[in-house]
Length: 53
Image (tube, rainbow, N blue to C red; front, side, top):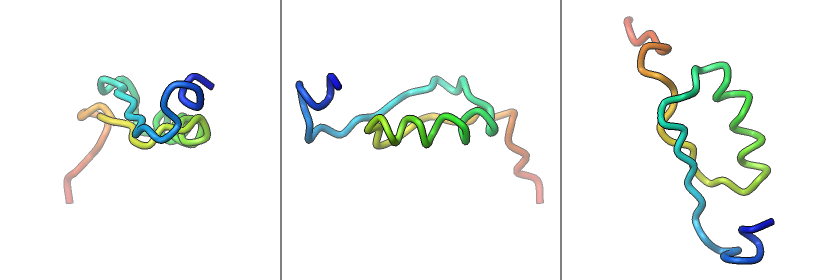
């Protein structure tokens, strides 16, 4: 609601400060998108992603 009053065309960036693991980020992202958030950064916690081949 605040966004629609103050700056309806503004780019909205949410910073989770690496506070989300993958499961939480996937749960929260659609809710943030519905609230008008354009980008969620940074996620997830580095240790929660296995990048090994």
